[in-house]
Amino acid sequence: MNDLKRRQSMLEQMVEQLLSSAKQQGATAAEAVVSRDSGFGVSVRMGEVETVEHTQDNALGVTVYFGQRKGTASTSDFSHDAIEETVKAACNFARYTSEDPCSGLADAELMATDVPDLDLYHPWAVEVDEAIAIALRCEDAARATDPRISNSEGADVSSHSGLHVYGNSHGFVGGYPTSRHSLSCSVLSQQGDSMERDYWYTSARCSDDLEVAEEVGQRAAQRALARLGGRRLTTRQSPIIFQAEVASGLLGSLLGAISGSALYRQASFLLDHLGKPIFPDFVHIHEEPLLKGAAASAPFDNEGVATYAKDLVTDGVLSSYLLGSYSARKLGMQTTANAGGIHNLRIDSGDLDHAALLKEMDRGLLVTELMGQGSNPVTGDYSRGASGFWVENGEIQYPVHEITIAGNLKQMYQDLLAIGSDIDRRGSIQTGSWLIREMTIAGE
Image (cartoon, one colour):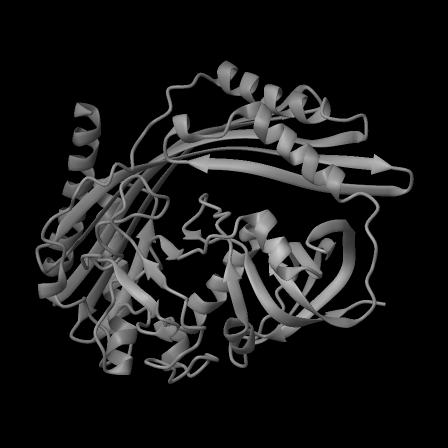
């Protein structure tokens, strides 16, 4: 840990050098970020090692302001001369840009005065040979699950650690280390003329929280096997369940629609919806940036503003946008500490587990995979290629593929009937499966 503190101190000194140099070159304000990331990854396929990769990335960026003229420059070279040249380049850019009345640092009184330890750093002391053995165990378990597992796209183990320091001319300098580890497996199943691919992965900040290698492999194999013999559906209207790992994309569309950049450009299907119901009244969506050890926790945002827990949707009503300081000024509002994005989004789930949610739907489509980028952020129109399973009497009957599902996100949000307790906890957006009253299925 002493070495970690030493490395963080070095990055903090670089940030202070950047800010000092910007001031000396005439900037009225400046902000800088320095990061250092390192890690490794191994991949195996069909019982053989395919790649062993070590990475180390340095990044340094500075933004300067001459009044309300802004310039930005970056480099991966941490030498003294490179730092000076990077600041000089940013200053030159700023001198020739036009003034923007909304540009500038976030307000000084909003800076994080305390940077709590959020337990985000758990380096994995794993040797390459051990990582290869884990990947082989994972793939071997997948291939041994069933004779119909005919091929493999391999298994991967990765481990990465990073150190991030941000500072600005308000006097704020803060940083913290992070870690991220993962294990994944992808295999192909075959039966007659039917061939399907599927995968599974586990990801965590601490290696002790990863799923067991054999379980990841078996889960990947079971998913690939379940897809065999897929059928097309006739075109129809039907209830739909978005399985948890794809339901997170529906929340992603919400985040895009309530982000400041979409709102001030008037490119959002939720324009002017603040304070209005957009979901049924049982829906509660909230951000929890200060959770210890969570996937997207952060004590401050990309502008040094202290993060805080907030509701985005309360009793179905949109209660907050997602704003950085620039978009907040454009909208005549205050930043919500979301410069750089969301930090641990949660939607409260109900009491129904996955099986009970199928029973609740009774007859309809369970969507487990989506293809394409078919959602319009301006109108909310939604159309995606999909595959999954047809459900009758609350039980899965057969796999379905080569269909398209369509609707409008505003209506889909209003038609949300239930959220399952089968929460996917691997990413920054955590949700259970969604049961939606009705959508169009385009097939044969």
